[in-house]
Image (cartoon, rainbow, N blue to C red; front, side):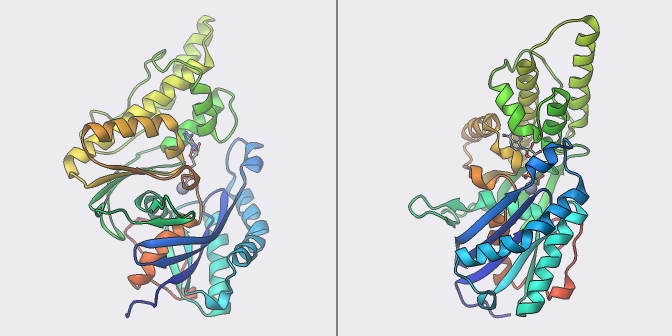
Length: 358
Ligand code: KG4
Ligand code: ZN
């Protein structure tokens, strides 16, 4: 397939969990220009239930997605007919939530006769760190020079914890992943245990800033497992039993100390495993992205580790750590160039989807 004429203009849609993301991006060479983007967060709704209920998330996506698409197209001064493609997250994620974005993309692809670019949610997070914000021009991102490949990515979110090798654009190999809870999920569960609001990550992080990270020595799971997998359910149980024992003995504890010690256990585990993976794969760069990458302590300790082993580290900007459609559009520019396109009736939402399967 001949490469499309550049710049290509893409409408990107993300609805895999509890954020409705829409963006219009223009891709030219190794640069991506975000013409307009918005995220409608459902956090206030899910705070009432202490977590995401998939059907409620889907209903919220349905109520907002059309006005959001209309608004982003208007802001970017883009007509549907002038788009080169529509990109959408097809998985992994919550099936009812994914289906809303996929159905919207199908309807628009049908109406405007445009190709669809299916995107894997984790690819999106990877690209949010792979491309760097242009320091001179707002809303422009570009590939760094020298070439960051092969890159090693640590993706940490509410649903995923994974170490991925990226040998070139759109080429991924999962080196390790969580066997149970994801890092963000652990933050959310411990926050609930401590009576902190949803989502737990920012709440724990705030509480931790007032506490002592060495007050409790919680377990650092899987550090000696000999592979690059993660497991956070044991750490969660460790915190639960420690607090239960203290309660039984009538010993008071400082919530901030628990939050700080828990956060340190997670961060140390993530950093140590990434360092091991870097030693094994000898990457040209390390990437850090996903919701949990917003955590300041993780960002700081990853910086220190990367400096120590002399590998450049690229961390997703704060505004692209949580779910958004800009990152989906970033992937889509490269996918369109590579001819990774489908017709509207050839795509479907897949709650479980391997990153290589597109
Ligand atoms: O990437 P994301 O927005 O959604 C998924 O793909 O899952 O990640 C959401 C997760 C939540 O579990 C949230 O608690 C966590 O990211 N998170 C944080 C922080 N901000 C968000 N975890 C730790 N520290 C933070 N500052
Ligand atoms: Zn995500």
